[in-house]
Image 1 (cartoon, helix red, strand yellow):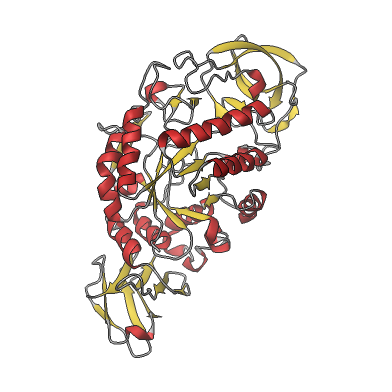
Image 2: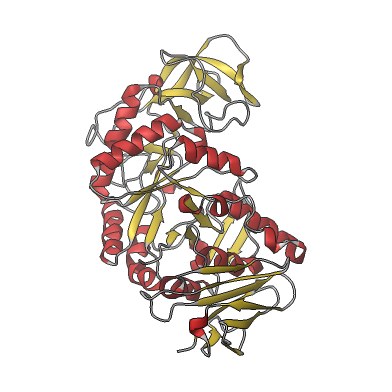
Length: 490
């Protein structure tokens, strides 16, 4: 069986001349040759900022760049036709497509409604700080540009549990909507600020059965329209787990395909929160391992003071590798974002070796590590350089990273592991060594079947050759503050 390798095919500030859908279509063959098996695309539907929207300010889930809404037909990433063409091109190369799915909120309502609300203490969302009051809010979504095509469902205040703007008062605050489904918030996984149901914009209320049915109908329509292979679920810590379980079950029943579903529950300090989510969803989803990302971030900052023997501690990939999707960075952690925690450049090759060349978890590569990216935001100029060794490591993962793993996570500044390979993948075997301090060396076992065989550093950092002894051991080396990937010399 081939290793699964995903790529997040966008970043927050994508600004290249070629729109993203066209670039993905043109890059399909290259991605396949690198060993990429799945692409996670950004939200493909119309946001409230139209052609400028990143996609997370969701307006119309049914508008994939087809209708003249919010001052544009195409989205930031291209037209519906270009989107579908990109998916087809990827499928032709055997690459699956995962669609970003935003269920938490909607933005950019078409009409004002008079809504009964209570003000909420932003630091303790369970505390109301006013009696009932009536405000005017942008809670009615009629999608006039689409005119009922694909769905005639109209969203109104009964579909939302809260808003953050009172148009008549010109006031920004958190207002809990009072309707027949309750006066407060839904039960959600995150208990930050008392209850973290409300995140932004118009918060969708999944207690409304009509909302649940509409989103199930949309999911089936989207799957059939775009021939999708899976879904990335955004911000699940703010969303009713009961609803998501219901939605996932409905999708898997309706779609005659094994869907990959990955949930984003951003946690950086408590494995119990992610484990609790796995239990609550009955293992229906994979989960992004934000805990491992945070360890990478801390390790890069600390340099040789970081104890590498602890790099996998308190991570999902260590505790529950079958549901873990590992990553180095993503659009939320990149520079200038609210969750900025970008792993320093020197450590990125080490981090990629740890997610690509080990047996646990499904790795997800970040766009800016395969392609250079430059952007400016509010006077801040950012230049992100692609990881030079990443293409080679991707190919090594695809062709050689198989079989029994032996760990040597036994030195605070130098750790390694080996893979023994298998019969299915010719010449598959690896030895990986990395250091966050001085030049490293370590005697590691690859297996007696390799006795007398020679290994070389495929990344070219070390020019020595390592000959395996009769017991199956070799002494492997790596440069200071770097990583070496040793493969069979053929």
